[in-house]
View 1 (tube, rainbow over the protein chains, first blue to last red):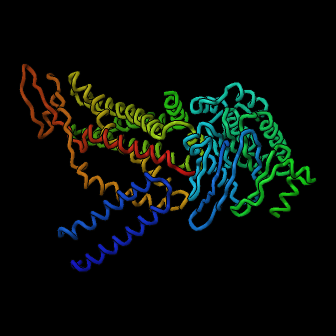
View 2 (view 1 turned 90 degrees about the vertical axis):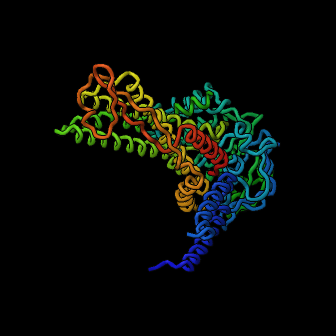
Length: 58
Length: 226
Length: 261
């Protein structure tokens, strides 16, 4: 199957939406501020890895 | 005031562990925390010890958060949680290194009175382990002793020894809050009883007042929570 | 200080079986290395080097499991006696890390001595500086650049996922940290750092062991000859890894302080 740019974009958006949901669950799932910021760092970095090719081209 | 819960709510996911609870613990009281399974006793005790943080409201021990003041409180959990490699000698070394208020003399007296065998915890019976954990806890000279089901799953002889040790170690400048299902056995200990039902305070009364009204803690338990 | 001493003793007491087992396994590796007696010197060296590499990798894995047992302690609530003690969280993390690193260092030095023995068997006599490189500096370098950040990360993994224990979301937290860490490292350039150890100088008067190895530069000197073994390239440098480990220990210490149980 050939991954067209449009299909890739849809996948990226879906992945970002999934990441957003995961971060929401993680944020509510603990009372530890350090865990909050760590989860934000990890989801943020993964999100950046997904967005980067979208912004700067593959 | 030694400790206080001010309008405290604890939520686990979608269910309530404790709801809008306010409680004051003065110095020098032995408080019985009573309720059926799932009524929020362990949640309350863990909030007081700082093991849990409230979803809403404020918990304080000697004016500060329990975590900040953890040197002043003792928590004995209901689970059979002790390192299996720990012998009474190891426990002595561990506790004296970690807790500045640990009294060696008191610990050795407790080991003797509770008749704890000198072998590692993994080779002890559940009752012997419970007695060792109690000795480790009571040998500290803390301000607040939080004991969650110290009699749970323990044989009759061990229960008697544990109750005697709690009475023997009581100090006027400290308070004990103790949850138990063995209401009849422990009721002689209590100055005050707090009944919880589904995370809500059902009754807070002085044991003496109950006795003056001709009621026992056990009969009140059955009346309020039955 | 008394708190840290007690925590180190506790680590020794609870993990000494693992530690002694790992150090004892050096006997097994020695036996395996001695069993390799291929005719060709290159084959023998390659196979014996492979055994040493496998032994080091297994050491890292075993020590990771050893410190990772904190997860089981938390699951069984055994850690409460430590959690409620009036001792800063980072000391709890540091004690576990330091004990595991000491065990790792002893193990790595043992492997270094084994490599030295392999060289001796091949007829290569190293000079004093190269022996120090082989049995002290190189193992210490491996421990600092590889073992230390790995074990610190394992502790962070356990404590980060434990923060989600009550909400039963630990499995999502495991996925996030396992995916997020390599991605974070790549984007922050830490993967790209390189560090060169100085080459080992092989003393003159040895047999023709090294001249049979292709691609090794040599230089004539005096009656015998000197040979410089190329410096060993490692990814990640000492300072970078120390800073990274310090940061991880700090974060893991905060997670320890904030843990609900």
